[in-house]
Structures are given as structure tokens and as C-alpha cells.
Image (cartoon, rainbow, N blue to C red):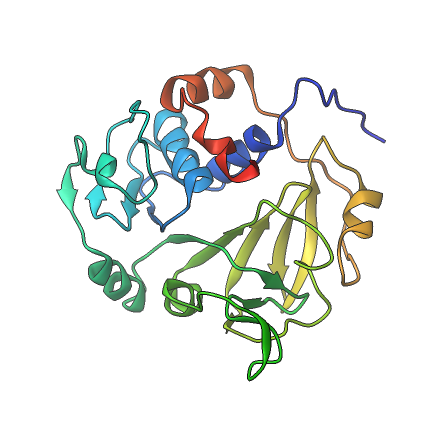
Length: 245
């Protein structure tokens, strides 16, 4: 079993670097609101191995420059700073529907082994315990983007369930990145792809509401020194950790 130094490795850094490594040069990649982790991951990818990646966002500023303002937002005016062009949200949807959006970073509240995503209600739809925001962009982008990457900063049995309470959207998932691991969607099922060095197979199993299947035990690579130095430069206020507060 691999033993990591949990005092030096941070889950926010592991997740950000893992998501950045999933992106390729020249891909067109979108993130929406409340998306600090994927936003920083996209900037990291552009700074490291994918200089021609096209950064699209809900604000509309294409390829914003690195932002060091304390008001840094994943959906605010900061993403217009130094932008190369303007590309509205409506155009992002159109791009995806035409099969031209390479990657969409999205999230949800419940997920099951069949790749169903719930962002609508907890409990019975007509008498829900909690009514959620709904599909919004996810209902359009998950089925139509070439690759849908889900990220979620909680990994527990209430999030990864045997069967979602409501299917907001389904299928076409590529990866799910959590604080414990990365799942991949293969042949209609979620499979464990890698375990983060701060976690273990037992921890993943204990916090997942469906059977955890895998082909082999692999660990997510730790962030490199170069990646960590770059993260300090492009995200000096550590907004990538904001969702864990």
C-alpha cells in the first residue's frame, strides 16, 4: 500500500493537477459558475503543456490572463481581463450541440454507477426533501460535449449512491474527479481509475454507495514541484481550495 505524507499533500492541489493533466493542447474547454477548481486547472494546463487550449467560461471572456485580484471569480468580470475574444454562453451551447466543444467541466449532487447525474431534487420529485437548482447547462452539455468531466469536492455515500433520486442527465461522462479518487465511465459503468495518494481503496469503498469496480489499483500522480510553483503564480490567493471551506 502506498503511504503519502498527508501533511504536505493537499487534496485541492491533487485534484487541480489531475484535472489539468486531462486537458490537451488546442482543446476547447468550458467551465461554468462556482468552478474555481476547473478554472485554475485550465489555467495550469495552458501554462504547462497546453498553451493553445481555448478557455471558455460563463462570463464570455476567451483565454483570460492570469488573475491575481482578490475578487477573483469563476463567473465574474475578472475573466474579461486580457481576454482574446468574447464568446457568450449561448454560443457555448451552440458549439456543444454542433459537436465542437471538446471538454465541459460540470458538477452535480448525486451520481450512480450507471453515470446518471442528479442536480434537481433529493427525495421524491413531487415532495422533495431538498429542491436543487436543476440541470441548467449540465442537461445540455453532458450529453453533447465530446468529454464531460465531473468534479465534486465531497465523496460520501449521499453523493455516490446506488440509484440517484432523479435523473437530471445521463451518459457521456468521461471522468469524475473527487477528493478521494478518479472514476472513469466505461461501457456504461463507473470504474475506479486511480486513487489519490492521500486516500486508500478502503476509504473509497467505505464512502461509495455502489460497488466499486476496477481493472487494476493505480494511484493518481502527486503534483510535481513545477506544477506547485506554477499554481502559486497563477492562483496566489489559493482559490482552488475555496470549495473545501
